[in-house]
Image (cartoon, rainbow, N blue to C red; front, side, top):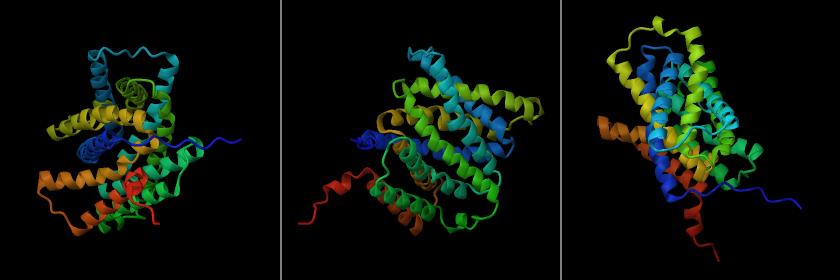
Length: 306
């Protein structure tokens, strides 16, 4: 007798709130990346991002009375998570953003939930229902509408950079599957562990390819970007990321990539006085429709036909 495939945990209202906060934190990473890459190459930016974030989280772990003494096996798993969730995707996106627009990078980043559902369906035992697939398709279409045709006009150019960004989303998808082994750990410990492992792996690569003494002295703008990237878009973001993953599962937390462009648009309206265009409303409507399909609670409240 075959057992039914497990379904992913349902998102609570607090999980959705945390997902929205995470989208704002990660939405800022594209902005910080552009500022930092204007002066420094990708690998040193990556090292400062994970290194400074790791130091900040290790300090918080200590202040919270937690311990990083989790055993050799868990630390080896941290290194695996660091490769899949930091080293590979961060490097590919940083390299890709040097050649393609941030808007196109955001659209490609929104492919993460698609690959996450496929990976969890094939290897994680989470069945990809028709409703969930329809929701992901609607969300991805909403991102494309939201960003607009100008970003899509670059599709097909710089093909290698676009393939690098897509490969990064595949790595994120597998990191969600791999990250399920950390459910019993406090999110702070998991975030600090994977970022510490990422730092230890990135350091020798940077010393070999981009030694710090060959880099220009960072300007105030670069320092601002690096600090924001490390503390806001990495340290705080990964604490929230692992908090959501523990309660709602990996395929659900990857939905954040649909909300990142929405957060970027709303930040532009609120902080920079940018105008909301009709396509912004259409794109956000498609994204929220997709999320409603994936969540399913609104549909269950609709009475069935007699």
